[in-house]
Image (cartoon, rainbow, N blue to C red; front, side):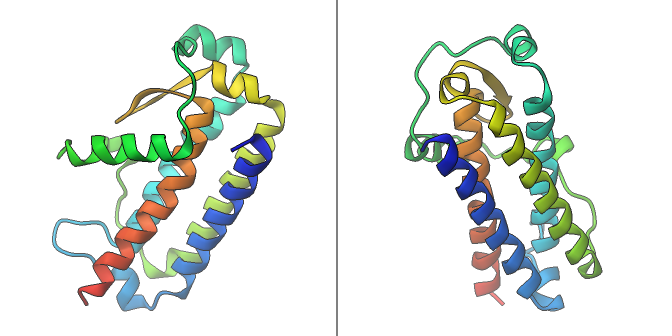
Length: 176
C-alpha cells in the first residue's frame, strides 16, 4: 500500500469500527467471556494503542532515528505483517502491556470513545502527509509484540488492529 492507500484504509477501518461500536446494544457492549475484554474495553485498548503512534509521528524523523534506529530490512507487505502478528499472538499468552490495557468502560462512553478514536486517526492521517514512502520504510517504531517495525508496518498494524478487535467482539457475541 502506498501512503494514500494507507491513509484511506486507516480512515475507513476506524470509521467502520466506530459505526460497529455505536450499533451495539448495551448488553452486547457489556458482554465478554470471563477474563476477556468487552467491546468498550476493546475500543479503549485501540485508543491507548494509537495515541503513541500519533506521538511518534509528531517527533522529528531525525529523533526517531536516534531513539529507535533505522530499518535494516525492507518493509513487510500488509499480509506479511498480519501473518507475523498472528504468529506472535498465537505463541504469546501474556496480557497486553499495562499501558495498553483498558479500565472499566461504560456504555454511555460510546460517543466519547468513537469521537476520541476518530480524532486520533484523523491526526495520524494528517501526520502522514509529512512522510514519504521512502521515510516510512526507513524509520522504525517499537512494537510490544513485534519488536521494531517500520513506520509503514506500524500503519499496516494499526489498520489490522481495529479489524482484529472488531472480529474478537463479533466472535464473543456469537456466544451470547
